[in-house]
Image (cartoon, rainbow, N blue to C red; front, side, top):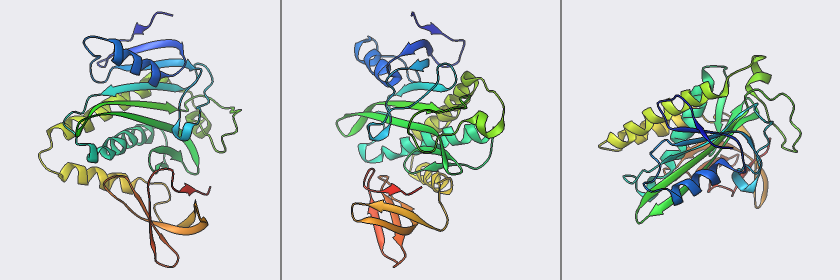
Length: 257
C-alpha cells in the first residue's frame, strides 16, 4: 500500500501494514537523498515482525494500538551521553500517558509500566559516527485499545483495559512527538550539564519500584535489593539487603515480577 502523509507538524507516514517500523525507517534513511528530516515518523496499523528488546516480538492487534518509529540525528551528542536519549524518550511516553491515567512508571531502562503491567515497549537503535551519534531510530509500541492478548508475554495491559475508554492512537502519537521535541530542543541548546542532570532526576523519580526492597535475578540467582542509583551511562545500581552495591548494564539483571 502507498504510504499517506497525515496532516501533522511532524512528517508522519501512515502504513496499513509493515514487517517492522524500525526496519522500514532504517531502509528509508539508508536509501533517501537527502535523508529524511528529523522526526520523520513511520506509523502502522499492523506490524508482522515488530522488534522488541532482548530479541522479543511485540504483539499488537491490527488497528488497535500505536506502533511507530521516529528518527533523530543528534550529531551534537557524544557517544558516552547517549543514555539521555533513552531517558527523554521514556519520559515523553510516560508523561503523555500520565494525561490519561495515573500510576505510570518507567521500568529500567525504558519499558513503560502501569502498576505491575507493561503498557509500552521502546527500542532505540543508534548509529555511531566517530565520537558522536549520527542517527537514532526510536521504535515504540503502546497498547491503546486492545483488550485480549494471546502471546506468552506475562503482563501486558492497555489504556482501554485501565480506563474502559477508547482512544485515537494518532492523537497520542502527536502528543508524544510534541513532548519529545520539547526535550530534544532543550538538549540541543543546553550549554552545560544542568539539563541532563534535570532529566536524570526526573527519570529517577519516575522509575518503577523506586521505593523499597524488591526481588531481582542475575547470573548468580535471585536476591532482594532496593534501587540506589542510575549512573550517567545507564548502569543500574542496586543495594542488596547486606548493604552491598551491585551495578548492572542492560541484560545483566532482571526484575522478578
